[in-house]
Image 1: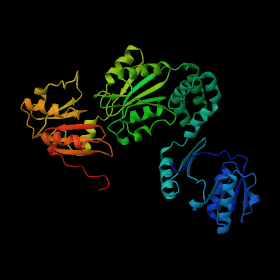
Image 2 (image 1 turned 180 degrees about the horizontal axis):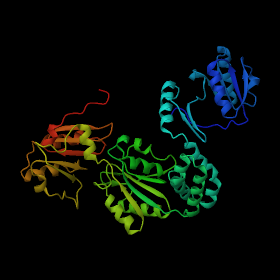
Image 3 (image 1 turned 30 degrees about the horizontal axis):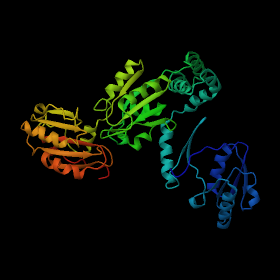
Image 4 (image 1 turned 180 degrees about the vertical axis):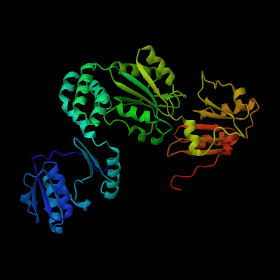
Length: 438
């Protein structure tokens, strides 16, 4: 983020406008709308900056523009010289306004036309009376604080009120009814919030593979407990002030044991917080989400499961590998490569059956044992295989060949990312998907 977004209160404060022309007139109109007292001059004198909250310039001589920038930097006054980013300490975004609501859109000065195009899309999306909904928040702000001293309780109430009946009435122009509905909801609101946990699948890594429900959960969470398979791009979609707790696991190295994670979920929910347990892939596919759900149910904590795109689906799709195929695989089997009591406890006879695809999770270290177990049951070691690292993310890479070849090369090929093995005749039938920019 090149520029820090901020909204300045300019009501009654002087702002210097230096120069002349249409560009400066447009800036003057914006500053006037914000309540600034305009101080206009065609040429620069430093005394003009006395008491100013900011300065904007356009259409002035070059020496005046540069002198203004130097003086503003020395005094700590924000300065904007139109279309001269090297002389600016702030830039003005494309702006969308709806009464109480102001939205600023910036490309960091790189492409102002693009910012305006985005503004047009936002303008077309926002309901015309959305500002009336914001006005409800202002109208009841103090009452909400008094009635609900707990921040989580206030946040949960406002989310319900500003997406529920009061908001719908305000959007319809029925402001008096909206205020009555808001007041009624506030009277019935619980001063002590009830905790709630969502077990959320973050998908295989790419942020745009999140479900809409997962995105909404991230925007509402007070606390996010996440593992190492959750990408930074996904975490960036969460509410900025949400507390983040890392409980990652890496090939049998657990910074927080599962029992500790279960207890943490219960403890945070009992504090009245909205908690998201964010897992790579799907929480109920080798993610131990079932154990967490049992712990929450035993403690009487309300929870829901938000499914995600599991690793096998994300990896296969990006690699162009069909998991089922009418000519090669009528069955898909998910397998864990984790050991139990030091051994790979799998039904190798069932896994060695033909016309199926095996998706083996977390199987890098036990790949030789998997190979040997399948071979004992007559499985052909020439069967096509693909080892996929960091699947479903922009960093996905693949090692393809027969099962024998992949097992032999895997130790030297594997990096630090999570790895999935796809095994079966269908693996050789895929076609690489076209790239988006192709």
